[in-house]
Every structure is written in structure tokens, then in C-alpha cells.
Length: 314
Image (cartoon, rainbow, N blue to C red; front, top):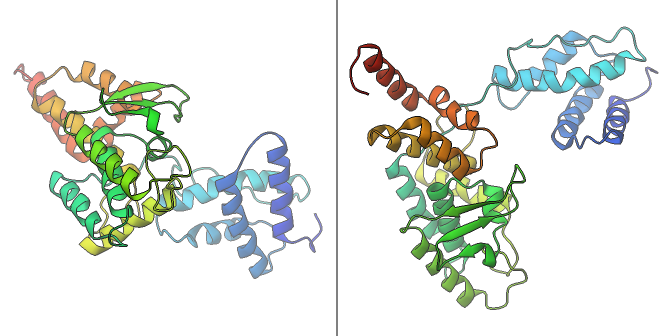
């Protein structure tokens, strides 16, 4: 490869090649674009281990797992460059440890959830639909464990307010499921629907959750609202993530559901299987992860195992 070829051009060639094979590479494309700018600014002629590690450590998030994920993305590109430049160094795997460790989420307490919902009332503008949309959407995520994408794609016909059931058709795993609502949730959805129809009498789409202009709400605007509320409350994020995330409301629902299984003395194995179906996990092992990945559940599981080992009732 010519030394005069920019790293941006090399990255574009790699991405074009991979996309021709059917890969989307939306996230990887952004990361490799960042690497190209970094390498071009340095005037680097070839990909070396020093260049790779320096770029990895230049991440906004100064954590080894962030560096490891950058290296993993770079490895494929380095192998591509090696075809034309034998001096290219392909960074070794696990240079900064595993890149796919599941990060511990922020689990909201009951008090935090109530404070979060109450704080949405102060979101502007006054007298508009946005505060009610945020409150209802955040509450629905926490009460059902829906993925944010599933909640945003709900249409009016997907929300059966009489039966208290959600029809989740467009899912991550492409498996349709019906989600029965707790009796305390349905009245809040009914109240939102009434306020929505009063404030937005001529919607532009059939989505259940709307913006003030009648269009469907999107994930960036809801994430912005979450960050806005968390800043107002002065909260610091817990867990391994750098910022508060909408997905943590789903994690909170699952953790609280598992805690109830333990507290009520239910059959945890059967309960986890049912919970896995309810939240739309592709494999029940994804639900079992919470027993080993969440400190609160790890402590309870360890205590139950200790009682079992001692021959005591669990």
C-alpha cells in the first residue's frame, strides 16, 4: 500500500470490502474512522502496535474494556492491511483483556424510580405532551422490562388497554410475544392516551408514544430527557457504564423480578424460565446471567447455596 494513501482512504476501502460481504459495520465504521483521523494526524505510515495501543487508550472512556473493544475492531482492519503491507502489526487478542465482558448496569432502587418519574413533570415545555411521554415511557420500561426499541415501535393497536396486554411484534430476536401488564400499569397508559389525543388531535403516525408535533418519538430524544432528569437530581451512575442508559430500566425490572422470586421463596429455576420468555430473551442463559453479574443477586444466590450445603431449607 502506498505511503501516500491516507488512513481514511484505507479504512473506506476496508469498509467497502466488508460491506460487500453483507456486514453493516455502522459502529465499527465510526470507530475505524476515529482511528484513521488519529493515524493521519500522527503522519503514521503503517499500523504498529504502538499506534494501535495509543489510539485505544485515547478513548473517551479510560477503562481497559473500552480499550479492548477498540483493539478488537482494529484487528480485522489490520489483517486487511497486512495483505498489502507485510510490516503491518496485527494487535494480539486480549491485549487489554476480554472485549466482551458484560458490564454491570445501574440498578435503580424503588425510591430512585419514583424520583425519576416525578422529576419528568418538570421537563419542558409546560403544558405540552413531552413530560407525560417521558414519564409514561420510563414507567413502562421499568414495569415491563421492554427494550426501548420495542416500546418506541408500539402502535395504538399494539396496546390493548381493555385487556391490559401489549403485542410486541418488532423484536430484537424476531419473535412476536404478548406482554400482560400489571393492573397498576394500565391506568397510567390510559391516562397518557387520553392526554395524547387531547394535546395532539391530528397525529402524523399510528405510534402510541408521540412528540408534540404528532411524529413518533425517537431514542436519542428519550435518552436526552433521561440525562436531563438525572442531572437535575444530581445522580451519579453506578455500575460499569459511563452514563445513565434507558436500557438500565429493563435491567432494573429483571433484577427486581428475580429478587421477588427469592423473597417469596418461589421456584427460582421455573421463575427464571418464565421471566426469560416475558422479557424476550433468546436464551434462558441470558436471564441466568443476572445471578452472576449483579452483586445483589450474587449475594442472595450464595446465601441460598450456603443454606443448601448446610442441609437447611432454602
